[in-house]
Length: 253
Length: 284
Image 1 (spheres, rainbow over the protein chains, first blue to last red):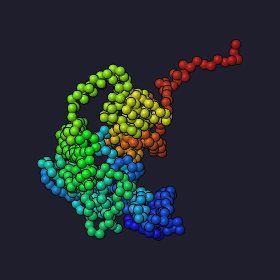
Image 2 (image 1 turned 180 degrees about the horizontal axis):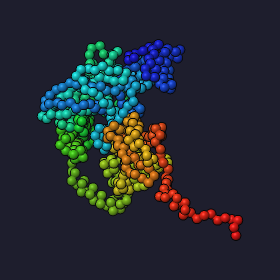
Image 3 (image 1 turned 90 degrees about the vertical axis):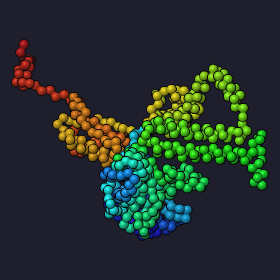
Image 4 (image 1 turned 60 degrees about the vertical axis):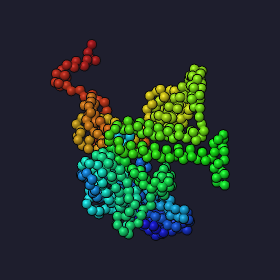
């Protein structure tokens, strides 16, 4: 299903069907779920329609930009580095591709989302929530419903730390996909028993994967580019300040 | 030519070059302040209370900015601050006595802007007015109430009143009492309630929802349901969740009793004997 399509594409799964056809007016996109259709006729400047996995924080309404993955507690020793594999939920974005760039035209998912609160009500953040088992190697997943998260844990403090959740900022999600998998790689630097920093790594899980369109870039959402300014000033990697990073300050379990 | 532009005098002895130097100093101070406060947060997050850490971050941030401004003043050839301060003090005293209410509103407005208990778009309740903050001006705050009416509240009133901000926090809790008939399988009712809450995306997974028998009432067994929702979705969730709870419980045959009285007679025969015989209308 993932990739770019010019015409004559159809897909059906769990009561959801997609169709892309060429009409005299332009490419036509139709998604039908439970008998309710979503139709879009593209302008002639749209050459193809891209279907990519996107950051799973948009449904049923966009209320947060954070993803929380909870899992069975993993013990990390002082100074230890460990790699674990988790799953995370997926949403599917449909984009109209033209010379001006990618424009989002539809967004749906095969799983019902659930949200949670990380931290206290007055200072925490609402997150898209997902429970995952912990794997020692990339698990088999349904590529339209779940992605694989390779998480590199690094304990920089002098205590043994139990980690049972990871919270990420969706703005920095860097997903790659191929015909059988969707995956992303992230790192968690443990600063103390209750504080850690998470960020994404721009690298595919294995060769041959295609980078997914980043939804927030496609929407043209402006960021506070303080970080770009520091890079322009020659301070390319400021310790503790990272564009993709999220500081987990309310605990790791 | 560039040198000519940079050495052009703008006013007094101040040149364009001086202005550029001041801008660079202030920008560098802002960047340094931002980096320092971020690292303070990371280093002290588990050693200090969040509120204290927030205050420390603000103090450090503004101290660095103030220091940068003080360094910049000589570059702009600004001096003689002492006389200016004394004159300002006298002027403030006179203005204060002459226009107490106006100044009070102005000062309250500045404090509101600095303290930020409310922002534009927030849903609040203040001075018996509920609605959305439309504008925060220097002298007053404009609220659009739920009926769409324009309400202007003087800032002194806003600042000195209790403000309830319904959306300042990330999440809010909702509490519902469901009365089910005596004789209901309570465990089954609770399981249905938890299933409905679990299936609802904006009923937060954490803090976990609660469902327990709260009271054995006169007419029903009262089940208390508590759940948290994102503040932005709280109002929509009210009716949505309640409707789904009712539909799910009703579909499983759980009854919601009306207020009622059941009268039991201890001895039915004695009760019948106590009733006076009805009079025969035919007798005299």
